Every structure is written in structure tokens, then in C-alpha cells.
Image 1 (cartoon, helix red, strand yellow):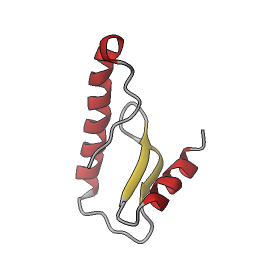
Image 2 (spheres, rainbow, N blue to C red):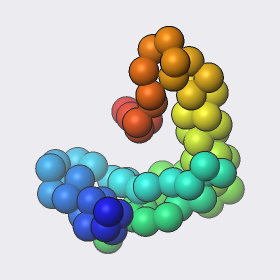
Image 3 (cartoon, one colour):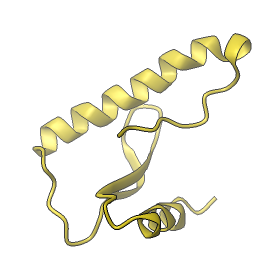
Length: 77
């Protein structure tokens, strides 16, 4: 799958979307990021911490895959 294309398609959905990214299991950005022309509202350190925490939450949900179904993504609003 072309993850960069996917992130661009997410931005097309709504002009209010500031950030769209695909993360690896450690929370590092594989594709996407902040919308062009938009400044981050948090520091780079806080952003890295948030992404790592997001990946950790997904990993923790995978513990329940057999009972509740596979976790495919994390949606954060």
C-alpha cells in the first residue's frame, strides 16, 4: 500500500485535518505528517511522545485480538 498517498487522501477529506500519518510499531512516522503550511501546536518532543504512546496503545489492544477482533488502526480526535 502507498502510505503517502493514503495520508494525502485523508487530508482531502477535511480541511480541518492537521495531521495524518502511518506509524510503525515503535511510533515512528513511516509516511505522512503535518499538513503542508500548518505549524504544530506541540513541541517536537511532545509529538514524538504522543506518537510513541499511540503505538503502545495499539500494541496493548492487540492482546485482545482473539476475543474482540484485530485492531486495525487507532483514531485520535
